[in-house]
Amino acid sequence: MKHLIEKRENEGRTGKAAARGGQAPALLARGAYDALVDMLRDGSLSSGSFATVPDLVEMLDFPLAAVREAVKRADACGFLNVIPKRGVMIMDAGPETTRACLSLRAMFDVEGARRLVKKGADMPLEALRAAHEDMLERAQREMTPDLPRQAIRTDLSLHDALSAGLDTRLEALLYDENRTRIAIIQNTRAFVPNRVVSAMEEHLAVISALETRDADAAADAIRLHLQNTLQWWGVPD
Image 1 (cartoon, helix red, strand yellow):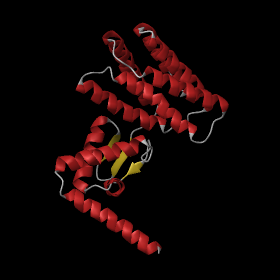
Image 2: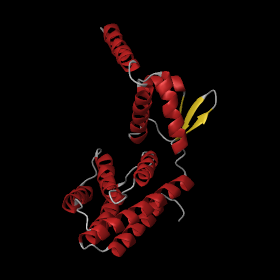
Image 3: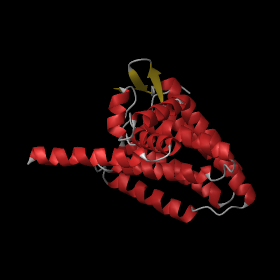
Image 4: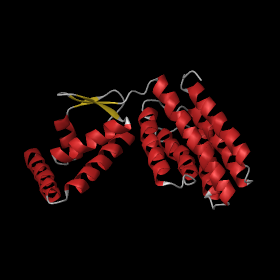
């Protein structure tokens, strides 16, 4: 039975690859890149880990040429480093990289908040507040095994909302690339109960400033959140 199941799984992978073989090379490369980013963001490929290109072909389930193009693009974005004739090493999540990525996100957040307030844009503040208050209450009550991952999603929801203020294609692309780098970093650090609580409180301060359309107060709250996050992760400011 086990042999039969494995045979069917292999046939399924072969069938997918054959179906994808009829797609245009650019579409295949984009699909392979998106699949690679998904694995970087969910921790399937973690900071400092090594993989050969054949490994990635198997993991991503895309043709070799498409995976090579995806690897080139990911290398250009700083998600990984290509080791010639060997494979790839996923980006380092050390202090210098962490500080740079979080500082860049704070810059995007401040500018996004400023533009959203200036334009009087609609923001999902009611939903954001409800989600953050719920997460805060749950973290104060009990730290369950699935709470850290859920807390990261709640944390990202505010940063993504602020990125809506970045209204050029280049800015949005740069934000999204940095979001992937931060996901790789976050996957190396557990979201401990006390930090979930303080992070939600810091985010709620940003939300309160946005509710009153006070861009300066939002910027101050964002910078405080950056400073505290670096301290919690042991990164010199």
